[in-house]
Image 1: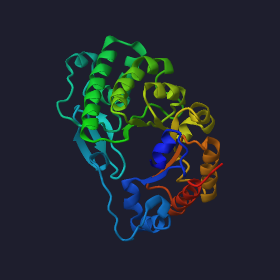
Image 2: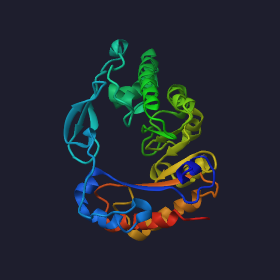
Image 3: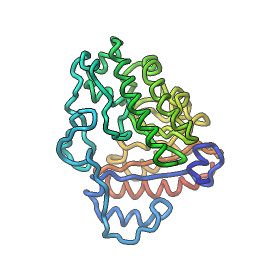
Length: 316
């Protein structure tokens, strides 16, 4: 059993699982210089043999230009290497929901598969009005999206047996949920549970990445089937995450991406250690993750890697 699974299931991992990822824009910005840093930290990156090889995957949503997804949403990207946004929303009126059908195409479960899918289809403002007024079309749309996601999840678990399946759907904004916790519980919690039940029935764990301020419903996410939650420290606050996660649900803490471009290396080091000391339990329940965009200075990237390598061995 890996330390990752031990941490997720509170079975005393030998080390704290840690991960560092770089956006395609970061590779484009720094190239081989990133490999020079990566080579210093084999605990994080293994054996980096060729410093000059810079090969990274650029998914469709990170490519400049426009495209339509399976639902008819138009995505636009003006900064290659960063993620696109939806600028064309196909369901401009509630009446159009009555004729909406699930896509025949099996497009999997991309980031934004449930809540964000609602805002992609309707547009953010119209979706917020729907949640405020609660017309019957709101539940109708949720059911259509949920059923498609259940279908995709069944296909996923049938195709490949894993210990854990990964989901990503940003539920929060910078300082709060975009809808009340009560409405989140009424409309979204049952939808997620229907999807995640498929995973648990297959004997696997559910990992959910979700950006924004979501601490008020983390307990509900666990009840809906989330085994590992991946929240942002900046949006939620460390104490809120200690209160809602420590010893209750495994957290893969997303370190402060808004600090990384502007903080000093020492400020970043202090930030990482503060989080680890606050959330650590010897039985597990803690993972640490850092994502570095193209605006993070190399000296800060180096400090992130150095500190996280040290934190992995922390024993309280």
